[in-house]
Image (cartoon, rainbow, N blue to C red; front, side, top):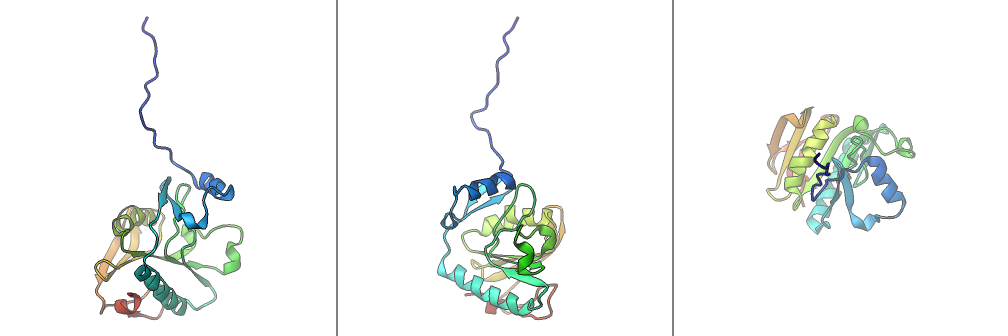
Length: 192
């Protein structure tokens, strides 16, 4: 009779849940300086921000704060967004329905998100690939990539599976406006 042996693979990919991730955070395993986020069950470390990235983030936040000045929206920067059971990214900016006090016991969810913005330089491939797929899959209605490499804005709307049905690229002279807001600006005004 042949002996039964276990077949072991040299590497097993462990997928983290949001619950596991929050447990690690509450235990102090990660600090704010660690720049870690959870996407599709993977812990992702983010590169430190260059000054151009920080400047663009500030400019976009100022514009979105004007565009969504009504009290029924919150504009957040680099804070957690609960997409699903295995994803809790920290987008550069997001606009969610509600008031600040609505999120005292939970992070904003994909259902509450109106717009997510990533400012991309060294993270461009990641923001166009895994992040775009995760945001689309979660039903985020509008996703902007402010592409600092090519100095354009990539606008994605109408999530459809892991893609967006409506995508366009705007040059610096192009007018950009959130679908849920009434005001526009040029892409150049958002670039560093």
